Image (cartoon, rainbow, N blue to C red; front, side, top):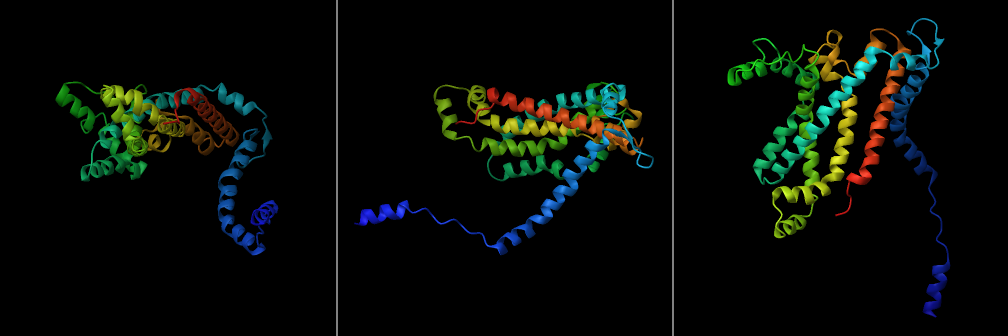
Length: 311
């Protein structure tokens, strides 16, 4: 009888959960600020930018339909193509070098224990919470080409080498910007990689040592594959950040007088806020969006072969 009763009770479907109207109103009340901010600062500007990309307008005169003319003008513009190449060069330097240094430092810090480890983490993370404008102003002094330049003075004194004009030479300015970018973002990447390293089971590394693997072999065969999800995440973020480079470049170098420092975001700003060509600026911004999406999709396609999620 008890079994029959249990079977009958199990056959009875559970009553649907009823949501009280008052709870729904409270949920809408607390979600409203976030939804409003999303609409006002993300979706609305995106819709406006898409609309402006197909017209010619300076903000004051009559709006004229341009169709795909703005996109064609940007894709054939020497200034915009140079900005695209400068942005790509910046990413090719900052992403592999910055992440490689971060992995090496994180592996070293992971072996430290106690107060020393915390001190080093604070030291490396300090540039991340420092204003980008302050960082650029400090590096202006370090990279100056005159007798006040710290880096060139040190190269001359210790190595007898005359340093280049880091901030004036179009061939060196992207290297200078890359140095500052790597330095300012290194601490964040180190912390991320430290978190990834601490999720690796120590038993696997111990087993590799017992099998005769040295430090490099253990890192290459055990640590790096298990760290690959973290590397993938940091790579995606670093690539997107390199495409968005603007503030430090604008303060560190004057791109108006140095074509080697002009990036895509600078071209978007110049067209919109200096030339008042809102259609051209919006078209350049949408091209930047498409390039960022393509780069991100390419990385997600590569993760199937390079990223290992199983331990």
